[in-house]
Length: 175
Image (cartoon, rainbow, N blue to C red; front, side, top):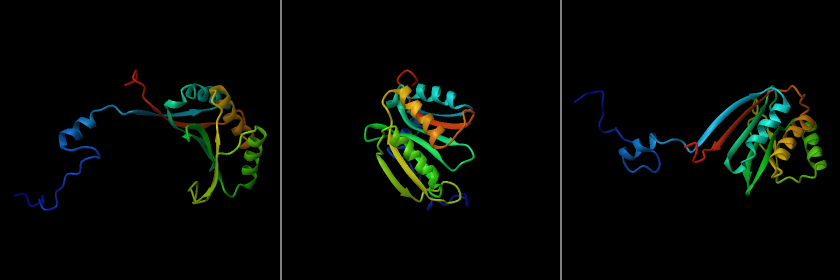
């Protein structure tokens, strides 16, 4: 017997839902049910067009993350209680930013779905306020609202660069 192999300690851990090794191997060869995308957008107008295209089929969108370069703030789009919402992660120490974003959304007559304080690690272990607002159901309106939040609430210029990460459910045509 090989002294390197200790049969007393060998185990086989199967992925959740697999009853045997053949089942685990067949699951490994399946296509994923979603696809992830990363994109760098260099202008807010380009961002608005890209978002409008993604939001045409909101049921296919699992999540979308918008990272504002050189800041601890970020935005996410995610379904919440059967409607697509924007989650704004704002550095808790940036009180002026929070009030600008809230004022903008209040003036746009959008009421928050959730407003909580949390100890989410943004950068350097700072706390973040998470503001959650429902988005309009019409894709161009939702995309315009998001870019207006970026412009007016986060004071981004038209030339701002943003990283966008999204994960979408695959349709039957893509599978």
